[in-house]
Image 1 (spheres, rainbow, N blue to C red):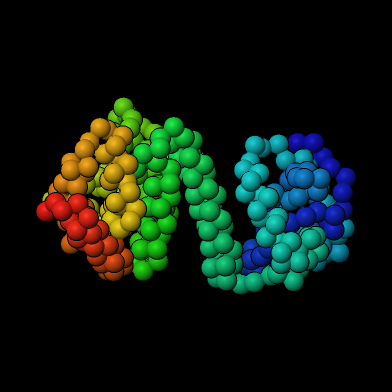
Image 2 (cartoon, rainbow, N blue to C red):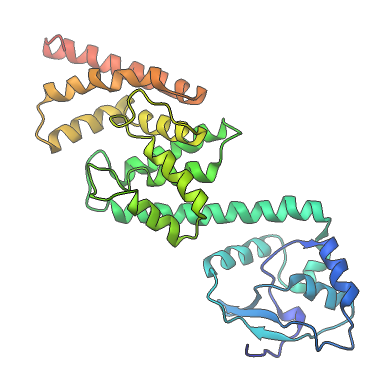
Length: 316
């Protein structure tokens, strides 16, 4: 790695907590006058500023030992720079502009795991969620029917609203399954074994176990393919409820006629879809929040059908 000649105070941190336990371990072996065994702290020039990508604890230990400089080296690995930019932004929001500032951010090991690890997990979820949104926007760019990107984003928002009321669920699985639930819809794509969804998840380094959980939730969504079946997982129940909510209410009505027109159905045929599927959904919800949201939308369907009968003179 190429060495860098900078002082510790010149470096922008990319994390905003230091573990007291880990710091004590570093201070036990750090000898200020002998740095031959001091592994260089990796630094990346990011948006014109030297940013530490690792070695924050060693930097603080060196500063506490009275050192201004330690071995530094240019970061050579191809890391997630989007992630590091977010980390740097979070540091600056907290007033951390130099490694000097980290000396005031030393916390217990338990607090470190609770606060820093949790923040990193949330950030990772945020990044992959944004990537999934962009992926489905591109995937459905040519689709203007009821199964388009807007539908996917509505299902995602509903799924996360339900997930907030289900503390035992894995929100990352819910988010990814909701966003990718139509990525391999048989009406739109000729894929097998969730190929589009799996490609995205693998590209974003989701572990194999996580991929299987997301795909299981996706595969439990379809009304026609899961009639009479209950999803095995809570995440599958949440995403199925969210997808079914989008078939109810004003949006459900609009989607029904949009899909019918796209496929040459008469309005009478589209109306029959209300009785074959839409009016059944309220009583098929799995979650309490899903049932609450479905009540109002179901009532809107019934009111629409009554208005249709009055205006058309048909007993639909």
